[in-house]
Image 1 (cartoon, rainbow, N blue to C red):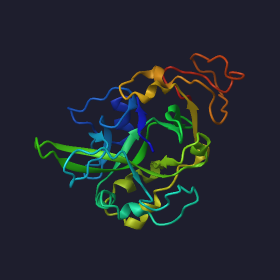
Image 2 (image 1 turned 60 degrees about the vertical axis):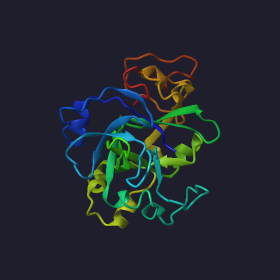
Image 3 (image 1 turned 120 degrees about the vertical axis):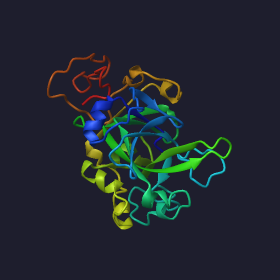
Image 4 (image 1 turned 120 degrees about the horizontal axis):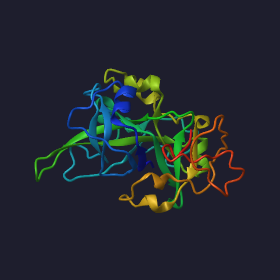
Amino acid sequence: MCGRYILVQKLELIEKRFNVTAPGGVDWKPAYNISPGQLAPVISSDNPKELQLYRFGMTPFWAKKAMYMINARAEGDHNKEDDPKYKGVKGIITKPSFRKPIRSQRCLIIADAFIEGTVKEKLSRPFVVYLKNNVRPFAFAGIWDEWANPETGEIIRSFAIITTTANELLHKIPHHRSPVILDKRHESKWLNTKLPLADVTRLLKPYPAELMNAYPIDPVIKNPRAEGKDLLKPVGERLVAEFDTKTKEGLELQGMGSGKNFTYDPEWPWGG
């Protein structure tokens, strides 16, 4: 499950990175704990040149009341054991809540990193998971839907992050699922509603583990109202040692081995 993520980029940088324009009403401030129910930036297949704010947690168009489906399993009802070697049917294409969105209502969900907990302790033992080599922001593969509140008539667009089997890094946490992170080359494909369904499902695979890393943080982040960069301060070492090749301004944490493999930069707390 991927139920919390981080996006602290300035609006101008997001626009430049994804070649989109934010309408005048869109305002974005750094968010260190994006949680279900909150509005967050997406780029949708029906308007791929505009940045929009949708609600995290998808409500299908047919629902009689608001729902918060934060994730959509690529395997659908298959692979219930979460076998990381699973190569079978992508059941997302037949699930009632997802079969329409996966065909025609896809979106890029913009993030800098995400929060994942262990299988047993969940967010009582959270980790920040990020992409190495300063790859940020990036895009999760998402689906969206539009729902009309029957009581108020309000139209709400909301999204879910697609998940797949866990890669080797997520297993180290340990966690049994991975959000689908798209290679930059495939982002425009994901938004192309004319892309054959077989090509769409081929994109639903784990991101290469060797290009990712993670470190533990304080469980205070499990409170969805908790905010601020201090939430991302490390409380232990990275799962995979990294060594900086240049000096960075920042606070070097003590009690974490030699100190050479973890530099805390308040601007980019999860490192390079």
